[in-house]
Image 1 (cartoon, rainbow, N blue to C red):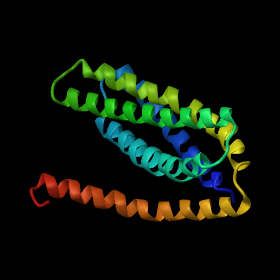
Image 2: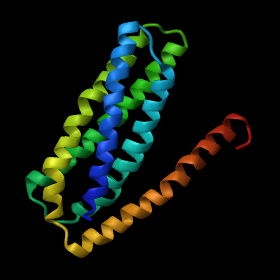
Image 3: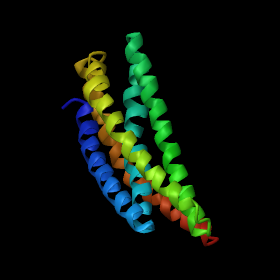
Image 4: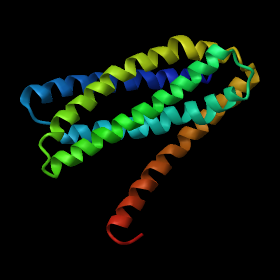
Length: 182
């Protein structure tokens, strides 16, 4: 398997979540109220799975190694664009979470921002994923030897092994601080 294999498999799960976000956003907007339990799940999914886990492997492994290569200017420009898109996704999720918190604190106008940011996620991810799957990933593999691809795949598996420990360690630390134990 090529190192883009797991990344493309992850894209399929992200696409499924984006379809759920789209469906839930439409229902929430129709009813004029947000399902904040779902919004929390969506924020967590995008932050942990799509960004930290998936984009983490892209940026910290694939893009890192490709940056050392003599890439065509068009491919390098596309890689930079993808990194900027990852940053945009992070800002969307931070804004979504901030709007949710604002609404909970009584800022009723924040509800429309919640809907807007959910729609922005739905608009953003399909094109971003298409760009990676259909354009960038196939080109990227041409810059890596078979040995480099195998080493990268192993590094991706190792990255995943550590993610669950990092995620739940972070949860415990956060709650310890909140409870004055940290």
